[in-house]
Image (cartoon, chains in turn blue, green):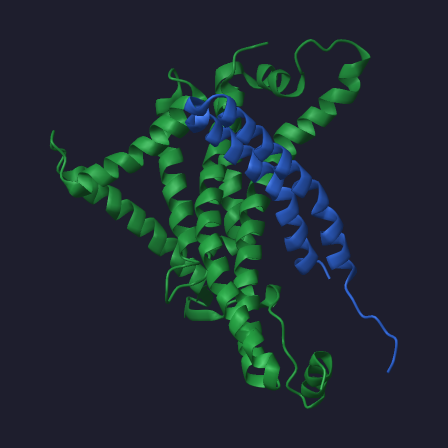
Length: 72
Length: 268
C-alpha cells in the first residue's frame, strides 16, 4: 500500500491554535473556583466575569476552527 | 476487513463520504423578489425581528400594577438586560439611553441563535458572516458616536488611544497600537466571535449527523454501531449548542455594553 499521507495543514494549524485558549480557559475557571471557594457569597458576581473571560479566550479557538475550514 | 479498508472500498465504488464544509451554509434562494433571491436566513432574520417585537409588545400592553404571566416574563427578560448588563456595566448615570438597543440586540441575537436548534428551522442565522458584520458595524457606530458626543472628536480619540500615565516616546508606539485595537479590531472580533461560534457549532452537528448516517448505511458489519455512537454524540453536542447559543448572545451584548461604557468613561 502506498505511503502517502494526505492531510490538511489547516487542521494542524487549528490544533496548534487550540493550545493557548485551552490553557487560558483552565486558568480562568481555576481562578473562579478559587474565588468561590474563598467566598461563596461572591458566586453570582464572579460568574459574570468568568463567563466573559471564557468567551473572550474561547473566541480565539473558535476563530481557529472556523478559519481552518473556510480558508483553502 | 479493516475499518479503513471497508471505507476505502466504499469510496472506490463511488459512494465516498462527502464531509460538510462551508458550502453547506450556502442555502439556495427560496423565491425571488424583483430579481433578488430571498434565502432562508433572510427570512429567519425578518421572522426573528417580528417575533421579538410582538413578544414585548404583547407583554407590555396591559401595564397592570400586578403583572399577569406574560407581563411577568416580559418584565423579567427586560430586567435581566437592563439591570445585570446595562446598569451594572455602563453605570447608573447613562445606561437608560442604551437599554433599548441592548435589549433588542440581545433578544434578536438570542432568537436567531436558537433558530439553529428549533426543529424545522435548524439553521443558526448568524452562521452567515454578512449578517453578523452588519450588527457589529451598528455597534461600532453606536459606541463611537456616544464617545464623540461626550468628549468631542479629539478628546474621544485621546481617550481611546492614549493610556493613562504614558508620556514621551512610548506614545509613538502605543497610540497606533491602541487605535488599531480599540477602533479597528473591535468590531471585527465582535463579529468574528459570534459568527465563528455559530459556524463551528452547526458544522459539528452536521458532521455527527451526516457521519453517523454514512457509517450506519455504508459501514460493514461491526462498524454500524459506530454510527449509533455518532448519533448519540450528535444529541449531546446539540445540548451543548443550546448553551453556546445563549452564551454567545449574552457575551455579544455584554461586550457592547463594555465598549459603550469605555467610550463614555471619564478622562484619566
